[in-house]
Image (cartoon, rainbow, N blue to C red; front, side):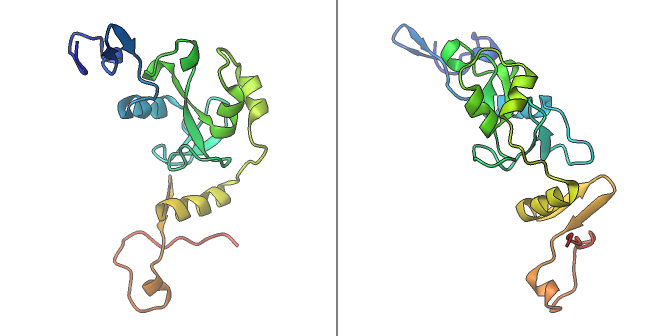
Length: 171
């Protein structure tokens, strides 16, 4: 068989053969990552393509993948790769990076145990707005859409071309 052989089941199509030994992919492919993100719980009042809850109930931001902060996350193997878990969507969950590091290669960790590994910081909506503005250049929430003003707008050199109002950042 060769990479991408149609005779392999879809979830195993990334497997390769090395001699007679099957080599399993270590990381999730982009489609499985997208499915994993979509399977995570939506944060009410937040854009679902930008914000989700991880499996421990922590708010994470899609732009903060594979970093170390409290809004950062990683794609985690529910059944660890080291214990035979496959890199497929149904074995994937998003976990705050800190939680994933503490979970390590445990085969089973319940939500309460995962919550115990979480960052203690909880961000109110206004702070998430500021973070979203800094990361994406706009804030998209039901009933509240706005964008960053350009430097030229702030200085009064140009009028905005965008129909969205400029965001009013909290003080």
